[in-house]
Image (cartoon, rainbow, N blue to C red; front, top):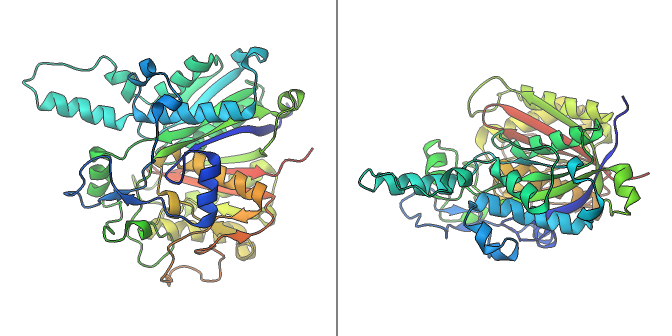
Amino acid sequence: MNARRVVITGIGALTPLGNTVEEYWTNLAKGVSGCAPITKFDASKFKTQFACEVKDFVATDYINRKDIRKMDLVSQYGVAVAKQAIEDSGIDLEKVDRNRFGVIWGSGIGGLKSFQDECVAFGQGDGTPRFNPFFIPKMIPDLIPGHISMIWGLKGPNFTTVSACASATNAMIDAFNYIRFGISDLFVTGGSEAAVCEAGIGGFNALRALSTRNDSPETASRPFDATRDGFVLGEGAGGFIFEELEHAKARGAKIYGEVIGGGMTADAYHMTAPHPEGEGSSRVMQEALKDAGLKPEDVDYINVHGTSTPLGDIGEVNAIKKVFGEKAYDVNISSTKSMTGHLLGAAGAVEALACLMAIEKGIIPPTINFETPDENLDSKLNLTFNKAQERTVDIALSNTFGFGGHNFSMVFKRYAE
């Protein structure tokens, strides 16, 4: 069976750097930090008092008031970027077979704030169960693609991938495979997360996973810097229309780029820590390149998982060196989490968008906040520190790894006939 080609024809973004693709990319290329003190709750008693929050989100710009009360913020973010991507694609839903138009979405946690609020309210009461009838539907992550499908009448495959911080990339690889092997023609795909709440910050603090640089939050996310002390929690969403090439051409769609490969592996090592030798992360890049029919020297840009944790950054860089060999010194590498923070299950989506825009604009977004070299990292690598670099990008690779040892990698290509 010959695999069909898959292209991207619509994009959407809701991020700590802006609520549209244009705002997101402009600030990403400028090296702007999206981190600031938390505004969603009083964090004064928490070890970490800052995050990369979405700013000025107005749900009614995307969703009618009746439906908003049925959705946790994570679903609202998902619907918002789905609307952006569908409108951007220019697709006429009355002229496509919606039975072959699906939604595959990623979210690592789902409706955490709804879960927190309902449980706290019950715990503070007299034991009488008074739960919101929308409690369960707001909490479970599969309702994100459920809402998207119901709003736009999309009747193809519909589900959520939950692979911790790799969830969105998992979703996009699934959508890619479903199209190229003939199961569907189009997908809304991507991911959303909205975990900036007491349970989110408190839970990750208990794991000692978050930075506690409260005196300088805008510099807290500092991948590869010797003084890095943990990741910065972010929130938001990224969304795409993945479409079979001939279907896209038949309707005269704008094509942003092509999806040409994906890899999936497991560390089988530890609940939260990466494999110390980057075993799973090196294999996943090899699998993605093999799937794409590429050699390491074909890659121009790698958007790394790069969370700003002491162990994770080293393991990923060592994995890149293992896979790319001498080519590792020629490729541009950057961690956009230095600006967006870590969007958990949505990270892969906004980082895939960074890859697409790097291809379109010929600009590598930087890894900001680098000050102190880490003697455990190879200083000869081009980690695109502090300032964007111009470069022709034909092939970009995006890595996302998650708690549980989940590793996913995707390859994007400049579209050509």
